[in-house]
Amino acid sequence: AAGAEGIPFPAAGQVAQAPFQYPQMLIAWHAGLGPMQEIVIAGGRDQPMTRQMLGVLRATFLPNAVVALHPPEGPEQQAIEALVPYATPQRMLDDRVTVYVCEGYICKLPVTDAGSLSRLLPAGSPSAGE
Image (cartoon, rainbow, N blue to C red; front, side, top):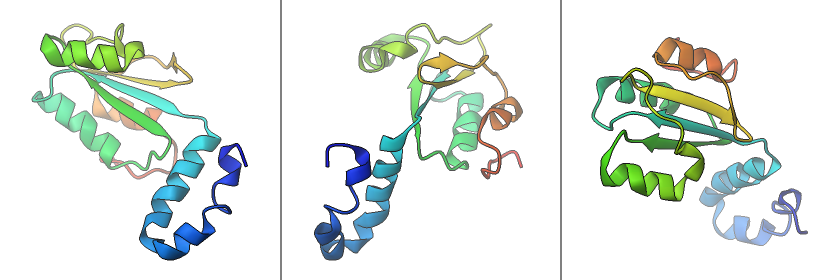
């Protein structure tokens, strides 16, 4: 089969040989069904609020999300912008760590605190703020 819906059955033999890889295959299959979220954290890697925002994301089950850290300056910023071009306009607001939660490259209003980020994530997902 050509699409994601054909992955589980043709891979049955491989699953039998490597059963511990099966959950990862299911995650990939599920991601292929869409929709995907793009989450950009605009902020420095070592800033306390960046770590807090990452904590919220790490504590939340987001199998269909891609998370990118967009540093405010330097070679890491340039590397991320080359790798993830949609992150280029997503910058810190008022020198505050800012998170952009998007789906299909259409973003909700950016947030600058962990509580607001938690509220943007899917209902029922465990998060650091709850």
